Image (cartoon, rainbow, N blue to C red; front, side, top):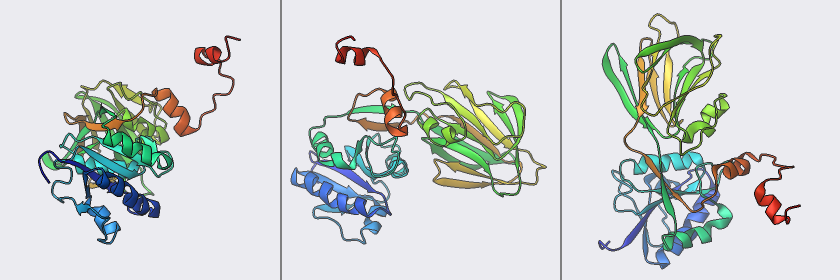
Length: 308
């Protein structure tokens, strides 16, 4: 590829047949327009090595290298995988939703041709989303180091046992809970696992960290929202019988023994999302959660009806 050529990394949902079919269409449109297309390693395996015309396998050690965009065909889980592949590259992601909710996606399958045209015209803007650095230690020694776009969760490993956790904020103890776990989420992740666990929805342009207990047996077990500079820590009580599991974005797991400590703070490395629309987050909530707005008589509606 010449230095002036354009390149897009294509990332596919590994188990959706429509993603494979759509990949051929998308790759063809981009290739005919002179855009170099590379396919992520898992996508190559999904297609059984039979790549669309003009498509090459991406470098497995640095898939997003020299790319201007990561184009994801799938749901939020596939977009999270695309974020893994492009981590540290500064390359933005754009998702075409083939899933159910698709909060992170920017367009739907039926809009694919228009989406590709927007990509060719570079007609999109880029939005940075806050991420989390997540580290753990055991007996004072480093144990794991990872990151999260949506959330980091500490969960019980065995169904029959509760996990006893002590939560710390900014170096001070908050509470000890017997619980199923705790979710530590970004505003982007507030509509994912944290929402299912009873946490608040936080607008994505607000920088904050959410802490949401999961089925805690305690009088004080409410969701908490702290500032972006706060540091959270979770200790698995050393003499507890249960062990835990650390999950980041539901994709990367680390087994945690009793006595493990997990530290979570804001990362200096955001994920960049390519946006095609300037719609308000309220409208996205209504669309994705199928919320009823029957009876609303706001200013826009009044203008449309002539002020009646």
